[in-house]
Length: 488
Image (cartoon, rainbow, N blue to C red; front, side, top):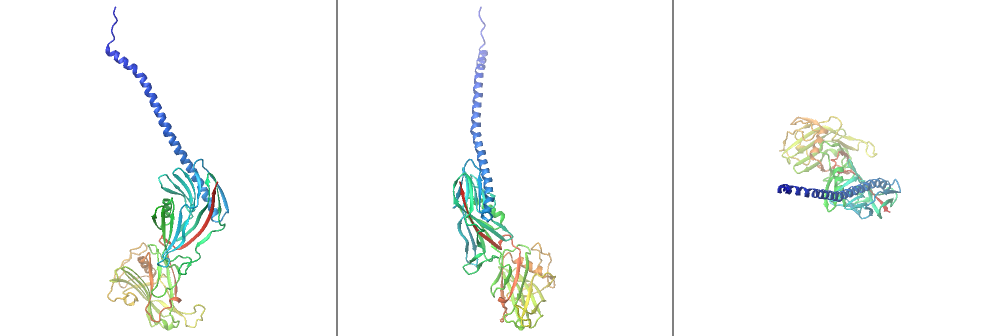
């Protein structure tokens, strides 16, 4: 009896199925092995990155604590401090040569520069872990990433507010390279050495005193954390920030010019107005003028001005009158402005707002020999001026052919929006503030004396005050503090 034969197709399918089972097991095992390898490799890398970030974060916290402790030493509140620096990887180093600073007063006399702080090392306490680092430098804490970018962790001891720059310059000295503990102590215990104001003089003999006048003050930082320094300057000072070279940033603040009490400059010289805000920021402007000869008749031909010219803009404040020979006599005040080089002009006039005064000055008897004129251009009362041609009344900008313009005061938020023509009136304070804003943010008011007898500028004085634009420095306070640091 013969056996039935198995069909060939059936045998083919049966043999293939028998092979699939072990192949499936092999594939599954292979996938498990590959997956495990990938997890181990990339997981270990991820764990390493997390651990590195954790180390850097701990070091950042330690540096922030060091910052607060070191500040108490630098500013004279403690002689020394110790700080534990947490880390299990990387290390800390004291680098007394890390970074530099310069502070320059540019154009202090209108032309020349002087270095208030010459190129000086800042020094740093630095934690490095691979390509990243965290450093205490210049009174602040900075963090640098592997791509070279940096950010500020805590701000430096650099404070700018309302035109006042306070900069306790903290310099790190010392040595050491390890992990564990930092010890910081004042190299010269006390409140630091004064840089400005100080018992120093400029090359022209003037003193290092406030308010700062003329030119600009520039702070120049060279540091591997320059990106973070620059961002701090840009957000905290409103100064002109420029990147002047490799790892170098500079912030420049305008000096605000004449501010507060002043002695009248001699003829052909002027009062410097600089860094004014864009609106009606002039708050007070007044002055007293006295003649060369104190006799009452010295004002008989009073013809005196302050004027400014910037391109097509012409501006003049004129005080004058004929036959002023006695006390309590009227003196004319005229204000002139042109924005087209003198083709047309704005004119404001009063023949009775000002008057001569007589009396005692500097302890001299009130015997009638002393005479003066007080000019307040921002009075608190509602003093009015008449809108009319004033070209014949001016000292500097005279031209009978000039046409009286028909201006509308709309250029500034505080302007009233009124249009003026011949016969209009307006408040003197608003007029003065408007034209100062037109000429601003910076200009020179130059003295012009048309009387041969002349005004005694050395005996004349005044007061001016205006709000700054946020890019100015009025008061400068710089001290130098050396701190010795050791890591062990």
